[in-house]
Figure (tube, rainbow, N blue to C red):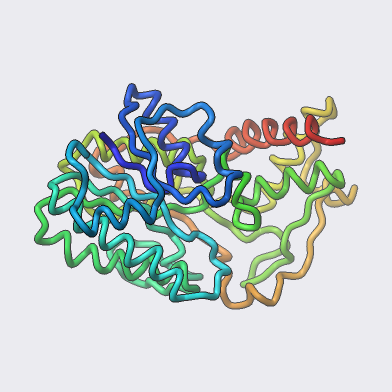
Length: 335
């Protein structure tokens, strides 16, 4: 049986979907379902059992992993980068992860966990080797510290331990994330409400909307996780992005035209969108000052070097499919 922590969440539920599609249904889903909106993500998934995250941790600390566990995908975390309670973030993201990792090593089963590109800070160079890491908030620091802990542990564990540094993930299953949902999620909602979308004004030497991120579809993230399950000989920390950065303007325009297509309207250019007031810009909130990544791009040579050769979903294609699904849902649910 496989364990997926955070299994009702955005990436966790998409991972279970991918596992189901590969014929794997013996899955123990671990999560905190206090927020019942996440249950929507579980409707079409097949699992063997469920445990609350606190009950699971208590069991692991008391008696180790249950018999029959063959691997752990640790996706559960406090992923809100704006949370100011550092003790809470460290307890959930760092201490919980350590306990689960040690239980996996003791049981001799693979431990594949979610890290984050946020560990790199504002400037990169986005290398898995540890150079240039500079976390800017409690969430990023919790991931950074656990990665460092794993580097020391993995050298002598003899077990598969894999950390996956997710870049900017988007796709279905993130409705519950609110302010932490992807930019595509927010832009689709904005267009539905006002027929306009807004981006941050220029910052860090970038023009309005030209800040760049490495946007990766959640289906690709799930696919990388399954690759490591099927290749237990590989361990280490790996970037999970497409290797290509694109501007927020690119995502905004893809969103606008995806929505326009649903409405039976023709596509517009970026300049037309600006001139028509469909795309506008606003000042970055003060709360993000000094904490904002204006550029990310994942070097993916480490992942490619161990044999992961699957092509990534193109941003235009991925955003179009995702946004149209979300936009249609918003229209159907409108009064």
